[in-house]
Image (cartoon, rainbow, N blue to C red; front, side):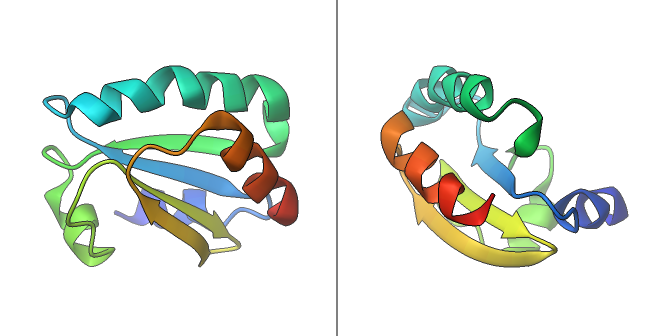
Length: 98
């Protein structure tokens, strides 16, 4: 848990993808996140959290559905959405915070 806190406290935006192996829409997010990573390179961190393996973190951040995407900047949640988010939308949202 403390490692997660360290990661989301970075100056650069951190996009956290809360997902589950059994979740169809979560599988759709993977290639989208890869494309987003290609756009931003090192300007943005992308972290995938398996809710089944990390139930304490999911509970702490009130993740009830997957996929849930949350953007943190310096430890503060600045954006959150559940469901699949398309690449162009994610890029424009991240541009506001990077």
